[in-house]
Length: 107
Image (tube, rainbow, N blue to C red):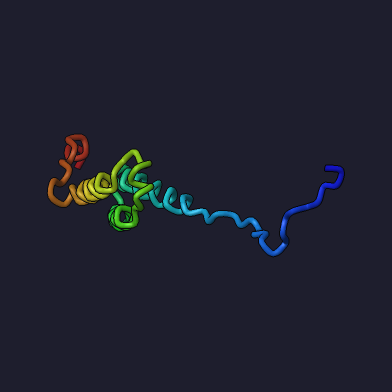
């Protein structure tokens, strides 16, 4: 007991390696797939609507099992929201806005 010998073997030491980060990229794509449809609806920009559809489908198809368990909104809901935003952007083609009476009376 008077001598304390180091019993560790140098050939069995495994250096520590940081675990790979995988959650940050999915969070960013999830944020884009949920905010782009709103931006397309507010601005009525067709290009943003199509980008929202593509991003939401990519996010839905790229979901892992952990993402499905931890996410608050399912992937198909983001896809539905993106398709709805596309419908809102193309709505003036099918239901054109009516001209106001003030503009018609001044002509």
